[in-house]
Image (cartoon, rainbow, N blue to C red):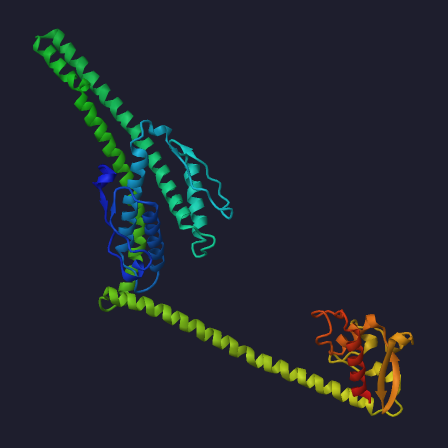
Amino acid sequence: MAMLGDPFDQTWTPPELPAFLKNVCDLKPIQGAPSDEEMIGIHAVVRVANKAADIQGISDPTLIPQLLGHLFEVQMARYQSKYLGAMFPKNSTYTPPTLPVHITVQLGPVTGAPPEEEIGKVHEAIRSYQQFANAPSLFDPRVDMELHQHLFDIQMARYRQRARSQARVHTSLSSAAVQETYEAEETTNNAGTGDNAIESRLLTRPINDASVHEAIERSNRFAEQTNQLAERANLLIEQSNRISERVNQLLERANTPVEQNTLAERFNGLFERLNQHMEESNRLTKESTQPVEKLGDILRNMNRVLVKVQHAIVRNHKGNNLSALNCLANEKGEIPVISGTTSNLAFGDFSSSLENKLPIVIDGISQISYIRDDWLGEFIQFYGIDDGLCEDESSELRPGKQGPARKRLGKFLTSCLG
């Protein structure tokens, strides 16, 4: 297989991509160990392909296994270029990427074969980081690629350790079997002719032959790489089974084969229909709020009419004087002496000092009421005539607005009782 050779002599060819995946990244053949940008592009295509696998009419049952196989090949090439030639692989150090602050998993360098807990932590970090794939400000494709490569590297380190352990057991058993054969032949030689002694020497010679040792080492490497392939194949099979189940469901509904272009058109059509549904939903939501808004307007208008009626009743009372000011209700149906806005104060509660004068007209006769500057804000807010005079929605007057506020309040009271 390609991975048994020098990775720099190999060319890794991606599967043919449909148009919507080429728009993500148009993958090209890779010569030797892949660059960071090439790895990032493959991961981006795999992410989008996995999302598209759940969309009816767009999934190709063979595409994701092919993409994962291509990803495995280039990850292996990257691993081989960094670690496979190490003199002492058990001392190799695998360093994870630096994770952003919103990922709480803490990863550290791993020397030699990692424990199961460390592999589990890397899996958890990848799952956590993948949740931010749709938030560009929180997701860096390079960090995602480096996380996946780190997981691949430490898994390979673990597989190599297992393969070496199995190779040592195999070599030990082989040596024991040869020794037993030698002893048996030596016993025969003592009882018989010299031919048996020559045979025993010929039997033991291959064990010390350098070419045999080289063959054993090569066999061990094959066994190690076979284990790696088997593990990766299991992952690919699981992915393929999930995709095949989805495709079988789609095929059961389909009466005729659908060509790739048709699938792409259906994919685009699905998104167009989704946008139409969203627009229609927004329109209906907007329309549904209009009757409520209209009802609110009607109620507010009715309330204003009732207030005007109440003011007219007060105005038509014969013999009105300054005490009539305390009978004028606001739009909540309150009068000053029972309102929290005015702290239950009446106009007659203010001292009759010169600076508190509030000129008004009652039944055509000019009269003087009184109110302090520091209460003007509360009273104009109570009557709903504070527009432009108070800070935001508070009853605190803006600087320099005491005069305009006093004038507006006097004019309003005059309109109610004059």
